[in-house]
Image 1 (cartoon, rainbow, N blue to C red):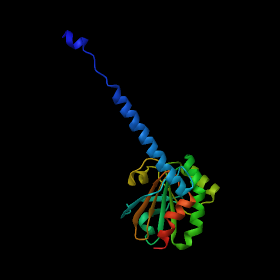
Image 2 (tube, one colour):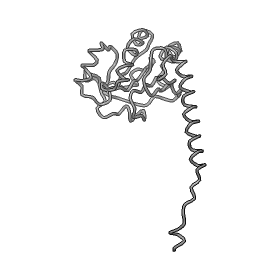
Image 3 (cartoon, rainbow, N blue to C red):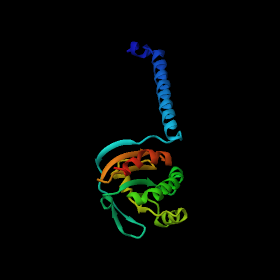
Image 4 (cartoon, rainbow, N blue to C red):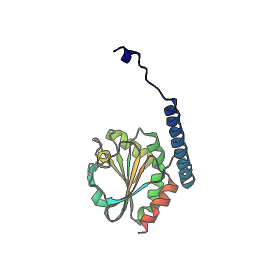
Length: 189
C-alpha cells in the first residue's frame, strides 16, 4: 500500500506539446479556409453553403394574418427559408440584403419564407413594418422550423428548388454576393 501512496504519475510534457501543435494546426487550417471563403464572398464572416439534394421537409406554420402556410405551397418556386429572430443582430443585418434580393428576383419565381423563432407577434409585426418586408413571414412560437431543420443557431438559411428539393443550407448570416452566386443559378433551372 505504501507503494501506491508514493507512486507518482509520470507526466509526459510531449503530450502537451503535441496537443498544442494540433491546436495551432487546427487554427491555421480554419483561418486559411476562412480567408478563401472571404475572398469568395467578400465578407470574412460569410461561409459558403452546404450543398444537399433531398426532399424538403414538411413544415406548416402561421403567417402574421393567421393563415396557415406550408412549404409545399411553394412547389414550382425557388424558396429561401430563413430562420431568424428580431433580437438577433446578424439576422437584422442580413434582412435588408434578403429583402433586396427578393425584390430583384420575385418575378422570376423566387420566394422568401422568413420564419421568426419565437418572438411575440407584436414584436415581429413591428419589425416587418419597419423594414417594409413584403415576403412571407411566419411565426414559430414553438421553434418547429429549428427542430425540423435540425439546427439551433440563428440565423440559418435553406434553399429549396422548384421541385421541392432542399439544395443549399447556410449557418450564419448571408449577403448579396453569396445570394447571387448560389441562388441565381437555381432560378435559371
